[in-house]
Length: 417
Image 1 (tube, rainbow, N blue to C red):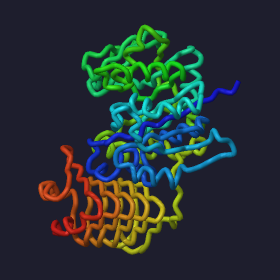
Image 2 (image 1 turned 180 degrees about the vertical axis):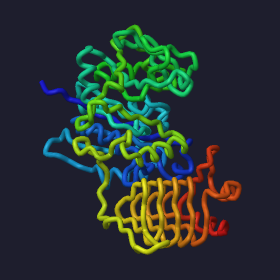
Image 3 (image 1 turned 45 degrees about the horizontal axis):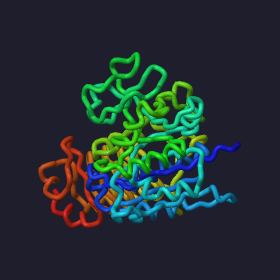
Image 4 (image 1 turned 135 degrees about the vertical axis):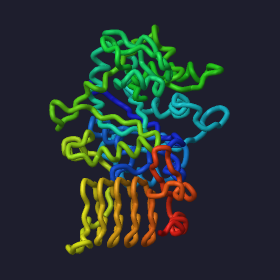
């Protein structure tokens, strides 16, 4: 019998801690790595793992996300079981409300599960940067005859207060959940680490449908998997933790260490982006056996011009995407998305520039994130005078300057030196 697996991606979060990058877009639609969006990671993991029936549940500020899914993920195979379909919030609850929690999001679309009639439902979030062979987690789920399997990643116990922690027995069976508790139980045989839930679940369909209906009827429930449904299953269902550090990706070296980052804040997003610049990056975007898929655009190649002293277009320890032109400008330790133009004498260091940014002659940008279409006038500076930057832009506690979209051109002009 061929196993029928339905994938559901929860992509409706506001992403308030990533503001201002989420001012006009949902967090899963935030660009990453030059040409991708955050949601591309979970969708690529599904497709590469052989999961071709996928619903993407959207909600807040979804236009950018819907456009990206239309450009890059609208495909149909010869079989009706092959699809990636965005599902906007349709307020199918009795009170016609927005999704109240992760479980309520599935409950309001329970008809999609019933119509698909899968053996398993794989429910993943769209908020993290990682590569994962989901087929290995499914195999683990089947071997243990589990009703529910929760993906978990080991983190230092000092970070327990930042995560939902899974308490497990030596055989991987889950015996407790602890929501952001500093004193959460550590991993079996490892007193220095705890299992953090990744927010990725596999359910047997019968268990999922039963629990969703029971939870929807409970007064006082927050209708969330991590807070309500999963803790209630402990002791009355076969529920296991899958150790993400055991996951192996085809095409990676045997000593490969699985990479997972919660890019929920500007600083975390910045650090994950900077990880890509390493000679041997922890997150490998160049594995042809496990491609990171995204929308395709008819961009020209990147171009570097002027082989002249003090006017040489070049990039060092950086990622430069298609359509970029470095006409006499210098880029160091940075990530440039599509269509960025760096003019003569300009210097960009330790920064992330999203699509179509334009850095004027002799302008300087340091430790900054520039959203799409930002125009930095000639001679202007960003990241050199943080007090001045705070007057016009968002600046994190660590000193990363985030410049919002098109309207920033006039504001940047006022900091010309």
